[in-house]
Image 1 (cartoon, rainbow, N blue to C red):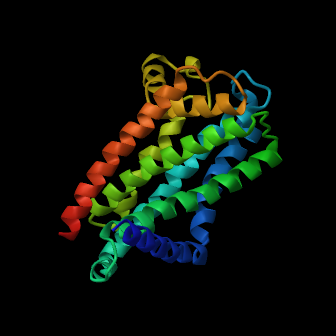
Image 2: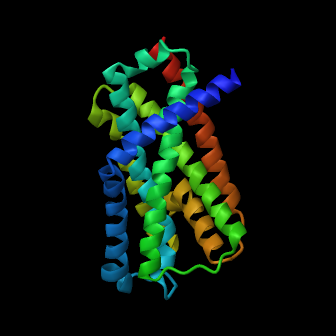
Image 3: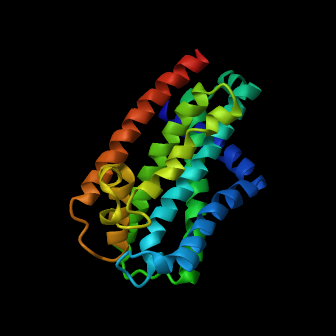
Length: 254
């Protein structure tokens, strides 16, 4: 059964990645908006923002990466919804392949790969803009691990949205508040500069702890309790999203 799952998943990943590479405009679209935000905040608004650092792009980058992933996740929901409507799931399920591989290989792992490409492109642009990090291999691996967890968490939420939606617009609408969430966090300005109620929300939502952790790892500073809060948010929401997505998937294909 395990061999069947892994072989089927490999085939599904190849199929989905062919679709991604043939429509690179989706990755370009996903990267353009975060890069535009980065350019706007660094070169237009950065001088007026008191972030306590001389290199604002270093401060800004973690939040931009989360915005890119949140934006890219909408395409996962879009592809899954279209597959459901096209009837291709029924065809796959009539073949001798593991049913779960259609979801894992066809959409979840493909989401990881496509979002990783977007993240790499944005980091390269940030380097041109002056981003610098003294972090060694282990902190960078920790950053990668957190971004992978964040991507997986949002991907399973995207699966729930796609399985529950009645239209394409409905499938991708869930991503809009996720893209906006970093603006109500420490991603662009310190939370101490925010008015009372906004500050309370910003300091107790998942993006702030994730951004603070990634920023500290890039700068080789102690991460403190932020890393545990970030991991708790990511792992907790990942598990909840996975369980709900599997239940919705089984109901959909029953």
